[in-house]
Image (cartoon, rainbow, N blue to C red; front, side, top):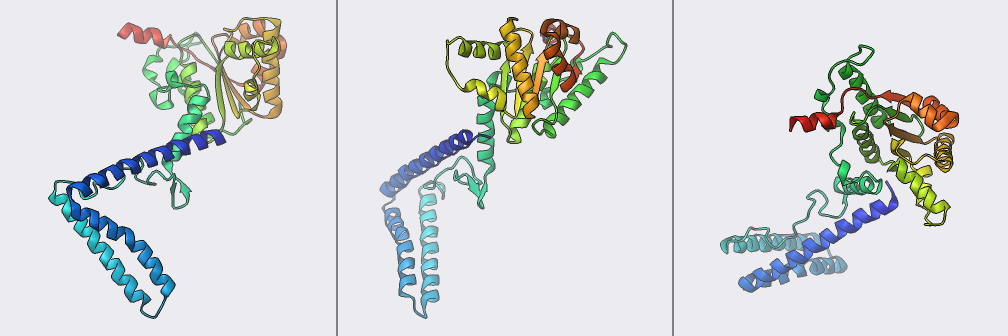
Length: 323
């Protein structure tokens, strides 16, 4: 998780905390106007802290006795205020801030440890900044529907069993992820679930605190092309080399030129050398990859990546047919 994602999460939490306090202050003023005695109680409660501090400064053998008496006075004032609120139809905690997180009261910490609400916010920001985006929000391991994997492959193997193996391997990849441990090449026809599983992997890897970039092959090439030919200048392309996991979707849809081949070879080769992981999805077969990208790229994809063949029928068409 990046420093920027963490700071953004804390900034949002701080805004929520300030809003909750401002709204509570308005409710305090409301009750003080409607119930004048509460205004007096609030003034007396506000004075308890300074009075306790003064007792500490003065010291003396009777400090504990006086401090206990002050505590009892404080508790009595609170009880009286609660009673007054309820008598006038208010909840007893009406004038207290209503925080979005009950665990940390929107502070971000529980017993000096980062609260789960902050972790969730950081993950959410990292998810969107990765390029996964809202369109792929529902593509998780839990939403994979094995009912659509039916029949047998051309070799006679069970499609469902083959895909159970593929899904299991992807889950293990995400659960045990460490940069450079493994890279995946997902091959198979359109609508077989490659993008779904790649997205699910990205989500889980982000939750583990690693940096993920998700981008289509064509967009990656276009971004490098814009930088190379002066149509844009940005350091953003460096993220393709440096992130812990790069997910390249739809390899083979980009316009194939010598520049394209150079960009892809450099990217794959650099990530392999630097020991960071890559997941590639493509509708192409291994033979088509070899023919289209030639030996230099093919040898890296087939030799340094675990090849996962996706089989079955187009799930999108199946779903459309059932609607």
